[in-house]
Length: 224
Image (cartoon, rainbow, N blue to C red; front, side):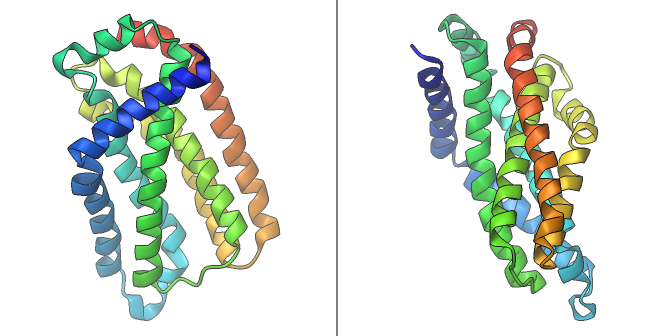
């Protein structure tokens, strides 16, 4: 079986589990929406603050919801010996890494579309620079998913993985949050030329952690 076929197999398996369990619809999406709504209540919309800080608030909401999705991606392997069964399937560890990261990417993109619509409706944001926004969102999502998958398997075998995963992951994702926020700010301000270097940073980060993840996932997966 080719690497691409194995990646599709693992990603399809994870996505089928999420569709059948409806965790994304019942927990992750409502959690992200509540975070966005709480920001709207906490900051006075009449002063125009929300529109100015909308990019940062959007990515904070995405990050917090992504922690749930990443933890869920490895929690499903704990029950009924599913993790051992996946090991015994003879799949390339790199394909398992890419497949699980791809499933997280799909979930996060759905989440970002819903939260983006909520931000536009609640924060009064005028959308501009659509190409930059799309490129930044895709690159940032790839960075979140690849990093989350790598650190997710690192924390999977730990007893306190629910609390350790955010502690391990949040400092590493600081460049993603910075680059995505600045790219969105420049795009919404109409300064698309200033936004592309931040998009390039996001792409480099995503490629770096994808490469590291493909190399390191196997040993971490066995030790977990």
